[in-house]
Figure 1: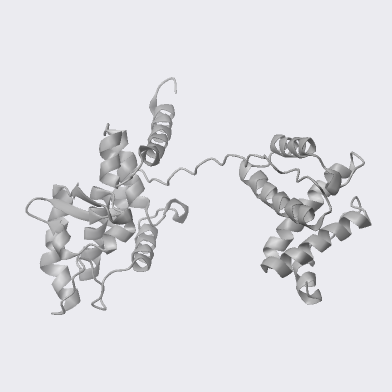
Figure 2: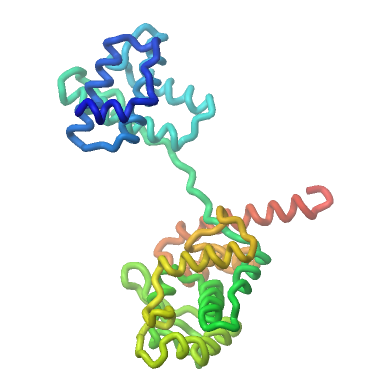
Length: 317
């Protein structure tokens, strides 16, 4: 590693007095090789250093070094970290560092057996999709100024997204021939090129018709565009434009930015349907999930919402 790169990567990190010179040199050699072989970023090198220094301090208490650390010791170290409040995600990142380190040491002939072999990566809890309350969704949907073409477009997009649970990529790519207003259905081409038919609902249909009649012609000013939702530049809407628009309307509706994601209305569609008794397999078809297990995560969101409702309003909650 070049001296300047090493210095900038380690400026804020000093080796503890508990780590002897040999361990320190070993860690530095690993970082140097990792940098030259993989071109790791400074933040990654700093994380590797913290992880290895932490292990070195821990094994030093047992009178050993990181090259003589056994699989059983690593198990104990990870267990102690978990008991000390470190998350599964933090331990998974640590294990990734240790695997990189010990595989390199084995390749260099410094050790015969990699102690991280047969280690199971800590299971990470799947983050629950963010979902707004029904009142918050209503506030978001009503936020656009429907007296303007852009506001009417935004309202139609919100209504359609909440009514159908489309992915944002599916929404912005809808072509005119994919919507049948008379039958009230939408043909969606989802992941893997799979098509599905999704009912739209009367409220969303009404807003789509208003958008078709007033806002879309005003935005296009005679230009022919195949996409349903267009911009003032007479082009198809993009994911980035839609995300910017969602954040702007969420702010005006007083919704915390941390509760907003590009797919927030898709998540709300799924969660609120389950709250009102929708069948899980029917929801799977509407969302276009190939596996029911993907859909089942929304049952956890719905369950959490019902728990909060119960605790707030039940006399013995």
